[in-house]
Amino acid sequence: MEDLTKKKCEPCERNEDPLKKDRIELYLKQTSDWNLIENRAISREFKYKNFKEAIGFVNKVAELAESEGHHPDIFLHDYNQVKITLSTHSIGGLSENDFIEAAKIDKLYE
Image 1 (cartoon, rainbow, N blue to C red):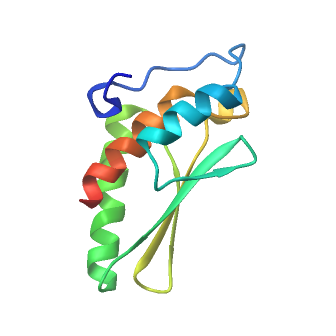
Image 2 (image 1 turned 180 degrees about the vertical axis):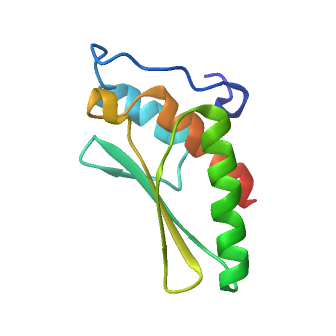
């Protein structure tokens, strides 16, 4: 399977179907730290030493999301923890875009 970090998010049409379980499982192998939520979304928690580092990460994710045209839900909590949830709202489930973005977010955290 092609390296997801080398791909670019593509706009989804409302008439597209969300990914099926078998495709989701293939993509999860490349984004193993992400948790599947009811076959409709993926999420991951990131922990930092302090608020400044956590908000710096949030800002990097925001820049990535803008450049990809694919925007996650971002939740900063307990001053140093960031929870990110990805889903393709226009199709009501997961698309390849969610896994592309997850892989690129993982790179930001390294």
